[in-house]
Image (cartoon, rainbow, N blue to C red; front, side, top):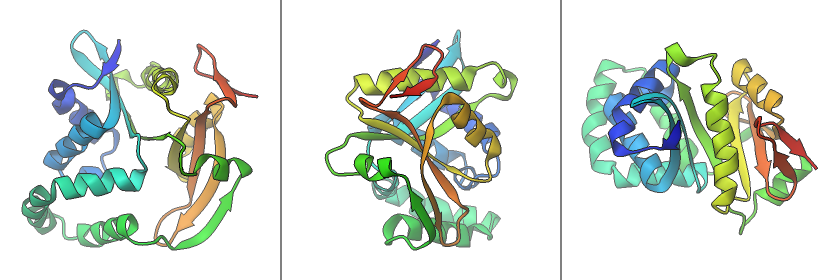
Length: 225
């Protein structure tokens, strides 16, 4: 069963996040920071959970604003929390200093690119007035992987968000993430941008849905017109 994330689900979702992304930047900030992240998805983003009974087996989350605006708001609304929390985290993991600096720079400064390549659709979608959603997190508990939980969450998102007025659904993935990129390709999503920001891996911007230009089958397969 798929339903919207509730505050009572967040502890279980954080555990799935840690198991799904054990070496990611966000995980390295610690469990309290991840709780703040999913509270933000619940409050001004969107999130779904896949459950069997009361047990959470998967989570899908994203933002209805730009990715930068979402994380900027997360930081500003929790500035005291991060100011108190981060020194202790950095003492335990000194190598995080550079990663945090680069991430904050990425959020608040004009981006610098080594490489950018855009398909024609990109400029038509990323423009003022469009109501776009950005998928940011998809995690599945270890015991439920390979059973279609992630696909079911994506299908639910593809059907639900357009009904809420979303014009396009996008996701960004590092080119080195072969599993996720393969999944998106199999689902019929389109690459509409390839970009490489300084100090980051090459990134693919996938287009999962575009109002009036595709249909979503019950299987979740996206068919472009």
